[in-house]
Amino acid sequence: MLAWLVLTSVTVDAQTSPAGQTAVALRVYLDCPSANCFEEYLRDEIEFVNFVRLPEDADIHLLVSYTVDTGGGGTQIVLRFIGVGRFDGVNRELKAISLAGDTESTRRDIMLRTAVVGLLGYLARDGLPPDVEVEVRAQRPEDQTATGAQDDPWHAWVFSIRGSAEIDAEESSRDRTWALNATADRTTEAWKISFGASWEQQTESFDLDEDEVFNATRRERQGEWFVARSAGPHWSFGFEGKAESSTFGNTSFSTSAMPAVEYSVFPYEEYATRAFRLVYSVGIVHATYNEITLFGKLEETHPQHKVGIAFLEIEPWGALWSGFEWSQYLHDASNYRLEVGVDLSLRITRGLSVDINASASRIRDQLSLPLRDATPEEVLLRLRQLESGFEVGLAFSLTYRFGSLFNNVVNPRFLR
Image (cartoon, rainbow, N blue to C red; front, side, top):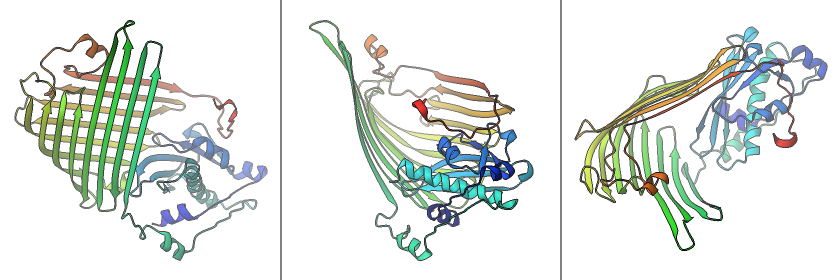
């Protein structure tokens, strides 16, 4: 609560003279691996530190480590200030919280105030220079109570409706896409509730000759719901469900309902640094199909269970995410799916970093595949799902940066 009060009610303006900056300026490495931290704006507005290009040259490693949606539909970004060198072991964590209706300008100002408050604490450890001016304007506690979260006629519910349309046309072809999405969410310390519905239709038209036009339509409808109840620092219980139809997946209507339990090895409050979670769910899946499937079915109902494991760690050396999910139909153990994935961003040495993204799936649960063969048009235009035993993906990049130590200047010309 203290961090919330500081970040939403304090405005800080700190300046130093050029001479003072040369004598006492902190060296800061700004690191945003998984969040939008408005990097150029911070480097332009915070003038009492020197931003450096490499973490090895910094006094403070400012790691913007995690973004999560808040109960009111806003965003919470965690800023971790990690002391290096003479500040080794002096670490702190602050949260920048924006509201659902905040503009991008407001969100970046909240980020700026949060960063300034954290950096001033390090500057003060060596004694503030005489030419530093700090101005603080704060709400009175009674004003905060009057406008705070307790006076909420929506009872923490947040609703969203979004519609979109896209049209691309050439002389002999046209592509029209329509989409509608709606969500309702409620997040409190004890409960996490989410409902969502989406509809999308894409129609492609091709003029084959003067008298013939070929139309291809792909339609997807989906509704999802999820309810979870916290049960302490390590346990949560939930219930999830889905209803959908898909021309691509040969599904006229499909629905599932599954109770779930999650165990977090690390306390949930450490989510900004690390997470290691295990999830198990079991329930029923019912489906009706547009066409007879490979197994001779137009309708079927089966029990299914899932096991998921996810690990996340964000540190000054980089970030690691890995996930594993196993799902299986209980009526036939041979119908299963195994998915694994890894995202790694690693600083190897000064200026050298590597990024790896890998994923693999073993697929044995395509119960909805139609009995008939796909036409050439359906294959080329991806109008229906094809039989596949596996999927793999790998992306790799190696980056080496060298040159000037400092990274203070922002030049907005030409928007390049």
